Structure formats: C-alpha cells, structure tokens
Length: 372
Image 1: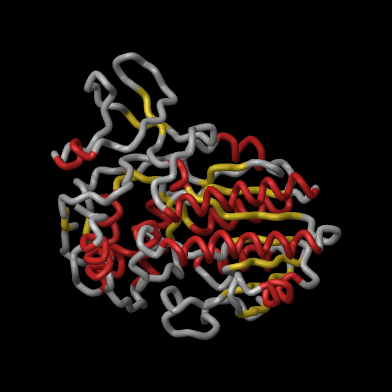
Image 2: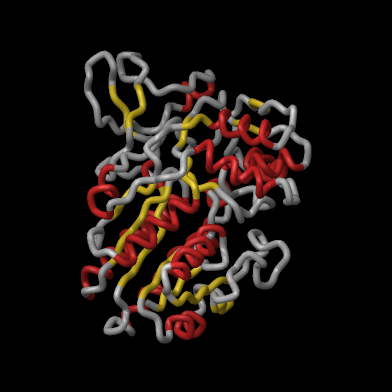
C-alpha cells in the first residue's frame, strides 16, 4: 500500500512512517516543516531515507494534489498543535486545521476510486473533562462541565457533585458527550467529524483515532506548546524546574508513540474500525507531577516540580481512556508500560539540547488572562 502522511515529518508521523515501512508499505510524507517544531529547518535527520518527503502548506491545493498522486491511503496528521496557543492565535489555528482538512478531503474525493482508507488524528482534548462517578450514590458515566471559576479561584481543584461530594474519575468512553474547551480541541472535533462524514458520503472507509497524551523520542523539545513530557524535559535539560499548574495531582493517560503508531497501522490495514471513532490510550491514569518527577530523576536533576498554584482557562482535572472499543474492533491494546517507555525517552533525552521557551509561553497566557 502507498500511504500519504500529512504532517509526516513530525513526531507521530515519522514513527508511523517507520512502522509502515517495516510492514512493507511505501510512505510519502507531506509537511510544512514549521520552524516552531523543526528548529533546524530542512529534512529531519530521524526521518527514514526511504520516506519520500514533499514540503508544502496543507492549505496549498496544488501541493496537496501533487502529494496525493499515486496514493492508496491518506493519514491526516498535519495540524497547528497547542491548546494554550490556539486560544490567542484563533484565526491561524482555524485556517490551518479546518481549511487544511477541507482541501485534503476535496482532493481525496477527486481520487476516490484509488483511495482505500482515510485516517485522521483526533484528540482526547475534545472531551473536555473526563468521565466520573459519584461514590456516594454509585452513579457512573457522569460528564461534568468545567469546574466553576469561584472554585478554582479558591484553589479547590477536585470536581464535586451538586451536594459537595468529591467525584471520582473513571475511564472516559467514546460515548461521553464532547465538550471541547479550546480552539484546538474544537478543530480536532471538526477533523474527526469532517473525515467520517465525507467518508460515509463518498463510500471511502474512514477512521478517527482520539490520541491521549503521547510521549516518546522526537518530540519537539523546544516547542512550549507540545506535550507535558516534552515541556518538562526542555526545562530540566536547561537546569530549571518543571512548571506545574494547580497542585500537580491532575491525571492524564500517557501513551508511548510506538503504541500509537501500531494502532494507526492496524486502523489502516484492518476494516474493523471503519466509520468509527476510537480512543487510543493505555487506560491508566498518571499524575502530572509523577511525570515531571520521573523525568527529573531519570536525568539526574535534583529539581522538584514548581507548583505554580495557578490554573489555565479551560483546563480539566482528570481524563484517561476507556480502551475497550479499540480492543474489540482492532485487537489493539497498549503494550509499552509507562515506566519502560519513560526509560527509552530518558535515554534519548541524554543526547538532546532544548531551547526553554516555557516562561515566555506562560507569560503570553497570563498577559491575556488565560492563566490566573
């Protein structure tokens, strides 16, 4: 199979390329090599030489048309990424993400007789808060709104029922109502709905995968809007403590990028998930502080996370994946334990340098009233 990966020179895209090449497929990457992600410019050293790289903007119809020539499948990863930044670069994020996806789809439709599969990356951010249960009543499957501003201002971080009972997080299922709390999350919700809707209308098998918190080698360490593991790493590599909002006990589902690539490869080559949206996570919650502490310890840095005691507009408290649907439809289960994946990440970090732009990114949020 000949597969086009938009955003294919990036973190997740390059790992998927490795996986597909190992499975005997041909891979073309289409990427704009955004300097916020690719500081050095040019083709990344980590991108396998067997990957054909075409450069261009996903909003450039002619460039997208050339990239699609001769392809059997399309993986759409190209996107402006970053929850906080999306809240003040609203036009750019919406243009890159919505218009870019629209052009990819229109050009794919023109080749619908040749295209065998569409795969799009979605995000756990579209859920808003995760799923909860009330331990007093036993009611589960609760989908609460964001915590009230008054509660956050009082530095009371956990979610509560109307009667004040603290709610307990439970695995978040694909059926939970979507309540995106950032422009980026809205864009990702649009991505999955656009691909699944167009796929169904034109008879093109389409799959949307909701990635949880992805970590691993090749993350853009100097991009202050990327994942938590990369942001903490950039601070520690510069001998500065990781900055942690709230009290650090908020939890997420951290999944190794190699597991993500394996699930994508399954979704491309199997038909069990066609027309569906699936969570891709481990099903295990890990606190943000634990991630920062693990990286600091592994790098030999005696730097405790700095709990800034602030909160960001739209931040959620807990969210981790219900993984049963991916197991049922694709036979996929994450195989790399957090501890093992972190050891591999740490081994890679030992040889890396990073520009720490985290303070500037935080100041940008504070100046706009988005962190308080």
